Length: 169
View 1: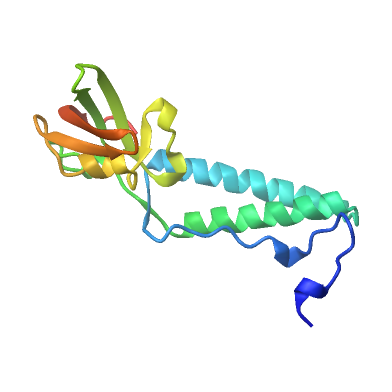
View 2: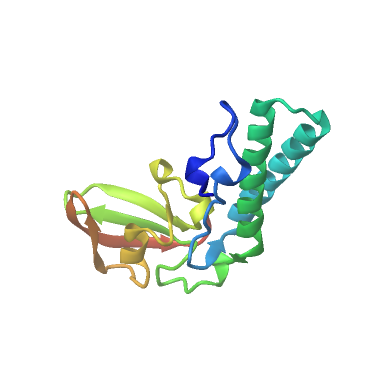
């Protein structure tokens, strides 16, 4: 019989109703800081998982949380297993690559600094952009003095690369 015709108990969510979180198709490049973020999250989830298992409760809400924690733990474990730690100091100093802090000047004359980091450590409001983002992809390979085009939904923005540094990230 199709599962579409099977009534589940109200308030309970079947274990297989929540699929695993998919991993990104590309490599999981991380800085040392990004790897530390993943390890701390793994530790937190492992501790919460142990707490929930110790309760040995049949309460639906706790069973739901246990499944959610297991799902998150599987995801983070996969991210750690696939992590490729990149040392920014080993990147070419005169070219934008993973781990770079890149100062750019917008057409308006406004300047911003963006840091190219791994997906797990991206924090756009603080200038930390994933290496796979359109902004980072526009800058990767550029050198000081180059102008790149950042294609955004709001329109294309031209950015001049003003400085590149690898002492952060």
